[in-house]
Length: 314
Image 1 (cartoon, rainbow, N blue to C red):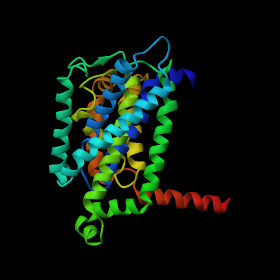
Image 2: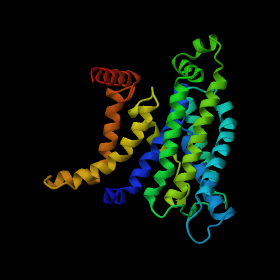
Image 3: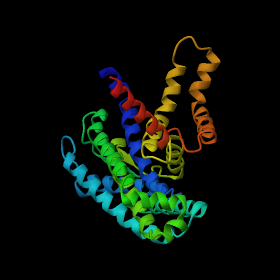
Image 4: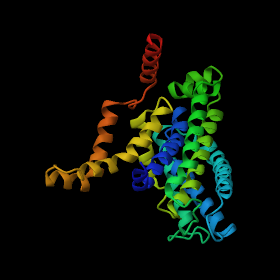
């Protein structure tokens, strides 16, 4: 086990962070809003952490203090939340593909701004973001509690009055509005909370990656996050978590299969060089054959019912 953790520490932490980031996209989608703004808030949180840790509190000898990392995550959450409200109020009047285009434009605007500011390092970015841990696997001590807290929050939200209002907006906004649900209020709430989660993940990721530039938090990131949610499942918070974990590990798993002995040379080479093509094909097939994702509320209910039956039988 220690050898496994040492070999795949970067991948394991990336899986957990991807699952949390997928939840930031799931929350607006829970209200029926096709928003791809999460990469922008993710980039904002990363820049905040990189600037604070390299310019405001420059690192001294030794490891960077973990309390300062937590402070950066809090600042990133507040800044992303404020920007989420500013962007969300006008943007969430749009629907469907128009909202998606508006949020893509928002991400590109933030990217262009970061390319032209000295404080963000311009096109080069900010290098040498200090490390709070001696080993990458130790980031799990922050990443896993963050994932658990976000999952608990999402689970509680789904069972609350606010969650039922969000689902009502997703199913039929006109009917929900007629029943007294304020569309703008709940959409902005979901959008803002998702922005805060993305900002927190960005702040932690800046330390984890050790550098931050305009290549983080781009449109490509938004497409990957959408794949996590759609393939994992967009009807329950468990879906984005499973999608983020599995799809982040999938390319590396394909590489591992290619390294297994006994495969024909052409097949092993294809798995190494074409694993991203296989990844894309699997995503395309998943959206066709599993339109609501692999994890659905009905599936979770059946699993829970089967577990109760086994416990009663025992």
